[in-house]
Image 1 (tube, rainbow, N blue to C red):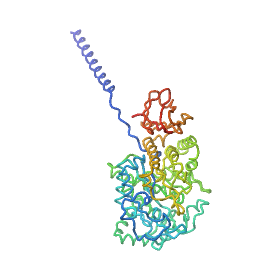
Image 2 (tube, helix red, strand yellow):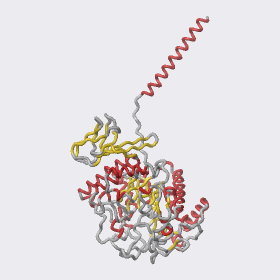
Image 3 (tube, helix red, strand yellow):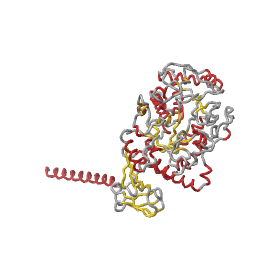
Image 4 (tube, one colour):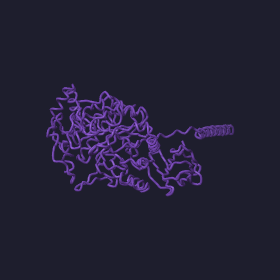
Length: 563
């Protein structure tokens, strides 16, 4: 009996072991089962964004019936009046796929709030607020640019196409005083002295130029709303609503009713209502820096509130983004801007990024000098922060290649330099920056040259170069946000690597390559047998003996792993 029980126990144990083994084998088989590899979604990172910057009035006219408002019919200096571009025009170009084909993943457009109604009489010629930087009423859009519904549709359309929206905002000043636009009360603004930019105080507590009233942003004293603004709201039938909203804002935040907090409330309403992704902030160094930290705090609150209300519309987990225009800041300065008597770290006051005024000078140097410098600074002094690079802009009269003689190099430098890139409208079509008869900034602001893109073969060729580089940059965070390493000196070949969590991105680029047959050294970065795609020539190649061989007429190669 005892032997029988022992035998049964052994048999049961053997059966259990067999079943367990069978189960483990099945589990192992399941683990070994070849499953289709799920492609990791490419994350959007502001550090390597490809931003398109346009003057709302000068890009595309979506609604010609709204070109004249508030009796703005006085003659102006050349390119100093409204020309009809609007928010609807931007939306139509997204719908046409224009930005997507350029690899654009964020659009920054000039301010669209209501501008002064009158024109200024200046030595440069009479001027209207076509550029958007002369606010009359922050709470409503200017009908020349469109309606709030137009802006809502723009944001929706952009988001549906993976494009973020950056609103340009002004906290530093109102618009100039004209016969139609009275000065704001002295509790709100100062009208003198004019800044001389010699010290911190003479850069912040002063007017930027003559007749540009400066908001008393440093004041914590409560002020009443201007009578002219109250009368305007009453006439438009929204006085009660505006006052109620202000009451709720000040009750929630506990801020004093000082000038800057009114404007902060009005600006962040667009985030709360529409889901704006970020602000490009104007005239940053002319405002006391604590105001920017307060703006960022309220903007972040509005962004998170919008995301909670609209979970199905949230693009990703990126926080609200702010990039600042600290005029003449350069990447070599690191985190601080030096006023002479005081240094300020704007990165510590709400800014993820600052516009870099240095690349237009660096662009004349060789590629490796530029790329090595920027990669090093962005991964040391500016780690976890960034810069937005540009080569032409709306108010820089000393851009790189002002005569548009080097459109291909402009694209190559801008698209491949570490950091975020800012394409100024018309960079990609070599829009002229020298317009006869214009004075000052106006020469940089002609209407977008769509007709050249439609009719001139060379313009189309330049445009295609921008498209190829832009799409490569947009697809690969490594280009703008990754670490740079030279792989070969001649022909010049370099790599970029970006890692975030489980996501890793690797690319190789060759520049100044010989035409015809060429070898690109990739040893130590891509192993032998690796299949790569040169997206510039749309050619698949295989790494052999530490290199890849291409045979085409291009002097550039953009190599990525074959998916």
